[in-house]
Length: 354
Image 1 (cartoon, helix red, strand yellow):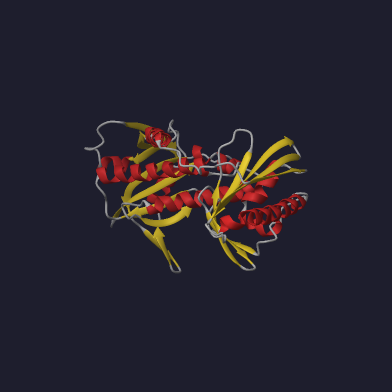
Image 2 (image 1 turned 90 degrees about the horizontal axis):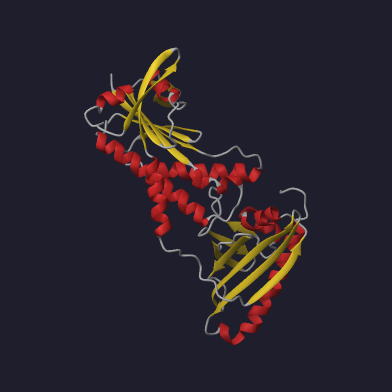
């Protein structure tokens, strides 16, 4: 009978959220991270199935100890590069988005017989080996991130497991089950420290060409959601017929989308800037005639629970021809944005999202 290596990377750290935005965003974020793990599947393991926040994979091509440990390290490094990058680029302040940086990744690895089951056209591993690795998902390992080897796998690599491994025994189904684990918490710290040393590449914002201010009788989170959730754009922006964007990703700095207008399409990219006491959302485009670049920033500053000061800063960089009619262009864009703000204010008076 064939032998197989069973491999499970498991994501943990999301709290339990209740509102629709948080649930929706957590699904998108986990999907992104699972896809990232599959993209860094250096051992070419076969995916059996996706199990919530985990991947269940296997291979009959048993890797060396060095190959397996490098595989887990690569996945973990890329995982934390992504979560760190996501945190620096996020524009949403919901519970899911704020805690993405706190997510952890652990690995469970087992070695044993390969028994397959076929149900209609579906064929996958089955039996005690599969049960054993799943039982170990619930364990008492006292660290956040680690790689866990079952006893059968440790026997295979015993000559290589020289240092850093801790043996533990737990009771499952009234019998002792031995395993070994290695702490990987240092990798997250190393990735985050490296990221913080990189030069900040945020948009270089100059003095705005125009600023529009308005007081909204609405909660800041609600306004920000209508601004940043691209699926709601057409509801308040009457210039836009529809928005083309990747519905499987959460909007963040660098996200691109197309606004389809009656007379054409404008390509936008999401931007923002740091703020301690406000929520800021913006976009930039190079698709407007007579302009090299146009970008705007909407600054939302709470006055109280249901009152928000909204300030829109407009930035225009003109082409050579545009410089001759820049006053007319600025006047037109400012007029359009006053209408957008009024429409957005009316929409935020509604009780629920569509």
